[in-house]
Image (tube, rainbow, N blue to C red; front, side, top):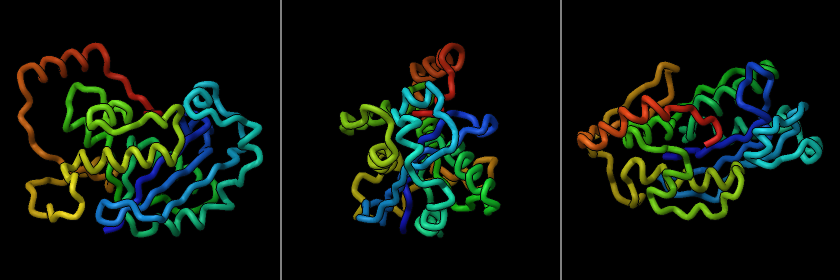
Length: 221
């Protein structure tokens, strides 16, 4: 089964404010093993990068102004992901920006099946930090190259995190008979695998404290 680990970087958080994509990175997995097939591009967003976004990825307006526009790469991108499941951390954010770009060109929205690793991690570790960096630390994945957010580096890390999240550290083994349920988000086709684990009293207390004090939505991790 082929899947695509996907990540984007943008000029800012909200498409409602006209923010655009500045980078797309994709790594193909075949039965959870990375293949040599990758898709990567920097994009000219035709607008300025917000200060917050620049702090995250470091792509300047001058650098991006020299890159291709989305309409020049869209066909290659859609061909690369066609018919494949997408693995994305905080899928709602990336899919919204990709669909916004497609809408500007009069093209159909992405209808691929999507696994949101943020939802998967939230379900598996209630009350804990579930940023990509936090998950790398939890699974002892070396993320020292992630000085700033770049799409391909994030895809490489997410691929390793994803394998751990679904408890399949050995991709060559057959896990098809594991006890798993599939949960569908309200959007219709964003899926994640749900394994029921009874939390300890300490975990429940931490979760309550998290919901009261620290619950935030981080669009860049």
